[in-house]
Amino acid sequence: MAELTHTDAVFTPKPSQPPPPNTVGVVGWLRKNLFGGPFDSVMTIIGAGLLAYFAYGLFQYTIVNAVWEADSYRECLDVTQGAGACWAGVDKWMNNYLYGRYPDAEQWRVNLGGIILAVWLAPFWFEKVTQKIAVGVSAVLTYPFLAGALFLGGDNGLFMQAMSSVALTLFAAVWLNVAACYSGRRSLGAVLVQVTGFAGKDDRLYKWVYLAAFAVGFVVAFIFQSTWNLAPVQTTNWGGLFLTLVISGIGISTALPSGVILALGRRSKMPVIRVFCTAFIELFRSVPLITILFMAVTMMPLFLPVTLNPDKLVLVIVAVCIFAAAYMAEIVRGGLQAINTGQYEAARAVGLNYWKMMTLIVMPQALKLMIPNIVGNFIGLLKDTTLVSIIGLYDILLMVRASGQDPKWLGMHTEPMLFAAFVFFVICFAMSKYSQHLERTIGGGYGRR
Picture 1 (spheres, rainbow, N blue to C red):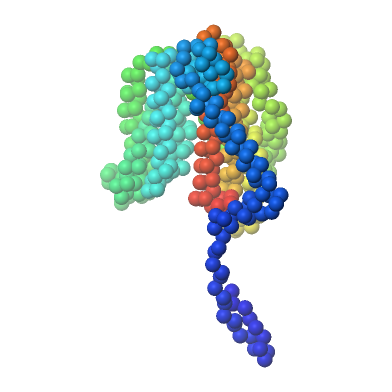
Picture 2: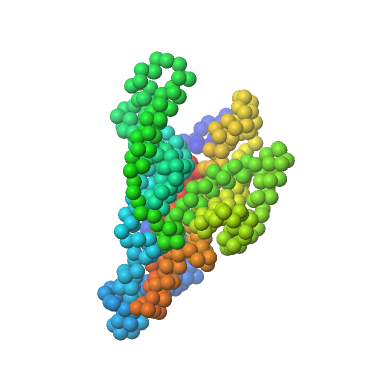
């Protein structure tokens, strides 16, 4: 900005000087951050030396001296003398690490379920696609039923068949909407309205077009899924990374909506709702997850009728969802309190009621601010699901421990643990990078500064 100089009581602008050229390159960055002084230089050299030492040792153990083909752990030790990893045992147990004891002939169902979910959520990354919120809501509400029908097999009953048909219908609608958006139309709804000739009629009649199209899709999907003849697979055979992703995926998908409801309830002016939500949050935040898991598995069946015997996996999923909702509620409440009161007052001034104020004005801003905390909570929940191994569910951690007890691979503990650590690192790192991407693209966190 131009500076003002005083001459004869008259202020005249002084010409601004161009900024100095940017001379801070790689050398300048290194000098500023790593070699700013003698002490910084010494610490940098020591740290780099230790890092190189450990990296070299890890490279020698995992790559150079490793054994990739062997029939037992004893053969690995004869070759490496303990100086290298026995990846042959990890390779032999890889199928169990991924699927647990799920039958080999039926593992395509697990793969198909994962592909369906990935394809269902893929439109989030398509720029021209509209109704992305509806895509996420449809996946969260209906995909678990479709996945359950695939993974469990057998006779799932009329309710599961109906919900699976709803999921298939919405899945098809998502990709028809993608096709409509990339063909130059606004959305699938606009195409349906135009094709049926309702474009020039009252907007209130459009809902009947949508309901009719959904009914046709539901009937077709119900007939299609009724022809499935899948072999039943009990949840006791589920395990490995598959089971870990099932538990953590359901917990993550339900944590945010339930946390929002609890946070709004805790801030409610109605005493009954406020006290209930506060008691719920404080109760389940005050005990560790393992305690809730033990209570769900051992105590909850005692309070249920004898004829009602819920599956252990169902009880564990309910416990994880309750635990995650309690923690997420406090994160959401913190985000709501970070919003300036002027936003609330402005929303009321334009005539918005409570729910429109929260959904259109307050909550979108709060969610942007909460992205780092939300993703951090999701990452913690993913890692906390390993506690289910303590109550007898063969998740990836328990399968890793079981491989070291196999008579042929007795004593193989380090390599499976390294593999499990690598899997968790890849998943958590991907979630962290996606969190940073969201902050940059939608303007939350450091991305807006």
